[in-house]
Image: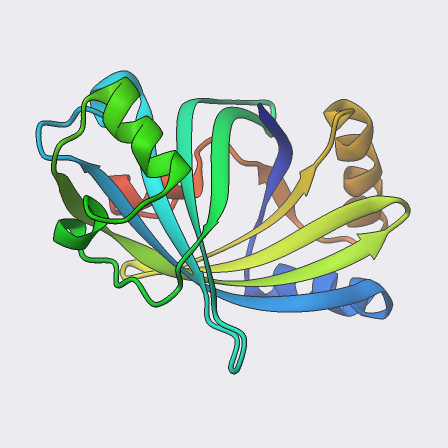
Length: 197
């Protein structure tokens, strides 16, 4: 179970302000491309699950992770989702016909537990993620680039999400950074085809 605080930043200006405030604590920047898949008979989505390939497009050090996410629930800016992830061969293209031939623990699980024989590509989006180590928390500040617009979000995985959320809210309020609780996952927004209002 992955438990994360998810707060949507109001604008590019809010994103820039938070990035500036946190700049002394930055540890990494990741350029990510996310591609999503379902079974050809909707075997995953019909059971509230989805398969994601995440490509880290760092020059000289490309990486890829395959992830099965299921039963996502977001309430009051806190997301809970079942997640199973492993590193994947970054040279494998995000071609649904090729996925069935790749040996992977997560893909075997998708085939065995969900009965997926063939995959279909759903599309995806890009994300620029700045990572900060701040007051014992790992904050991830995202610039999510959809075909229909750009969204900004701050995330923090934590075993004590209410405490982490309170700390992040104090930081945002002290620096007059506009935000709201996220009510949808990035994938749900992608599937809706429009930014949250």
